[in-house]
Image (cartoon, rainbow, N blue to C red; front, side, top):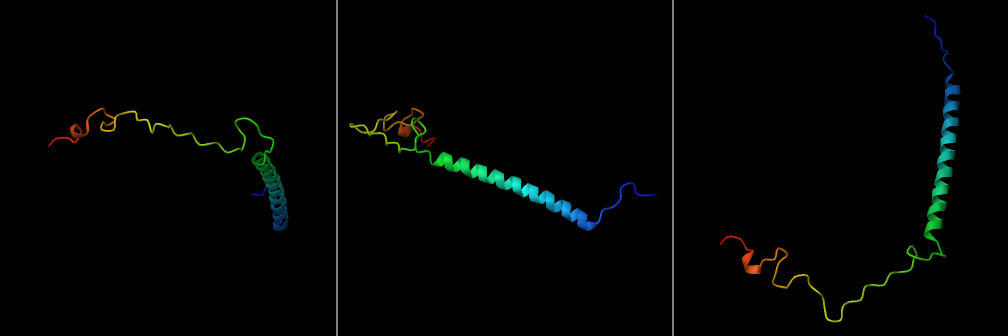
Length: 89
């Protein structure tokens, strides 16, 4: 049975693979340069104002009368007393 598609010389196949690889590498380099430019421009935004600015946030001021508790110090989150939550004796 005769071959319908003639086989190519190995050098022709290698040249075709090289051209495809070179095109893929060029596209990848363009994408990498574009992403680098985008990251650098976002990281060094000097004219930023509003919520996205790079100024450091100040720490919340502590209350003058001490910490505020949701529950009393002897009471647990399940609203039981310390001695009532130990389980069976």
